[in-house]
Length: 120
Image (tube, rainbow, N blue to C red):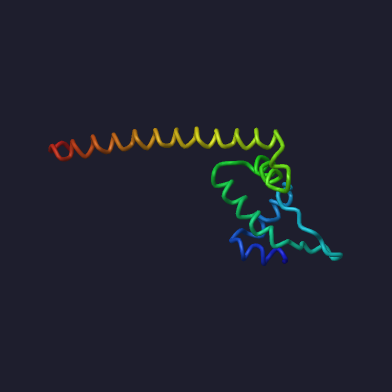
């Protein structure tokens, strides 16, 4: 499929797809005239990239993670270690966000209590 179709199917702009290619996350084949030809599996790859970007990972790390998903490399120690580090980073970030949310909940409860008691 050409880049426009991949963009339509994934909801990702053509510009972003070109950037993913530039960063080595996507590796389309090229026709003799230079058109990019993407595989069906690239749809899922782009979906993975979008999910991992939303989780706060950079394209360099995403490229490493995606290489771990291809074939047997998932079993390599460095892939396991890399995936473990990223998982721990996400867990730490979730805990920080959760603590901040709890603090806001407490402040909102205090503010609601003051309002109910007649304090502005």
